[in-house]
Image (cartoon, rainbow, N blue to C red; front, side):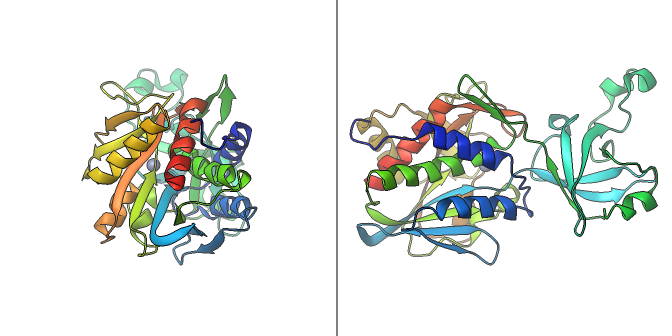
Length: 349
Ligand SMILES: [Zn+2]
């Protein structure tokens, strides 16, 4: 770490907190994309553009441009959509992305009508009251049929709910409930906003040290990862390497933890690019960046999305360990800083 530029931890946490508090369920990520764009606009050497699909691309000129590279992280998150307005005025939901309903039960949420102000509410089991439904509250299976949104406005009929501007297809964002305690960051959607923050902070680290990446580097902030095709398009085909920056899966049997960055050498989509992964590991060793090597059992990434779409690049995956992923997530500043250092080392290599 001795010869790497310093990482601004306060900046990292501050930007991450802002980003976590900006709702961006897949399909409605424009607010978060705009925040990332506005933040990156502070670095005049980046050329910013958006893809037709709405992703953000920043081109960072390097000292060389004969073998351009790409980094990607996704800014979209899990969420839901209004599936149906129920006879009691409450909302049935269709999930966006892969998660279990019990992980958002009792969570606050925001519904985004297309032409009116957002409306607050919460996600509950239909038979939620313990005093009314007794053991059913414990025994009911949490599924699309048995979960609903209770809106914090007066409505008890579909007509009243429609008058609020709410319609089938409106997006629903889950409250992130961000807290930072003793350098632990606890929030929903650290997947993958934590990694967007690491990339942005890596840019700042190089910029402040007056450094340029060795190769021209594309920073691709994707907006459809949670549904599987985020980076399928949009990464310039000149890129010869793609480092996907996404959270590491922490749990029983995993080497990953909340205090370290991990490199994923294999997930549900199979092995990543061995040579690029080996180079990243070697870089981390050289820079004394303590890290884990892991396999994620139920996991796919934007790197694989690009491979599946025909992208001819070497793909590797690194990122901070996140506990309780696709649930109420948590990581530690050490993992975020380690990931950022690793990115900086890669950019300068
Ligand atoms: Zn992710």
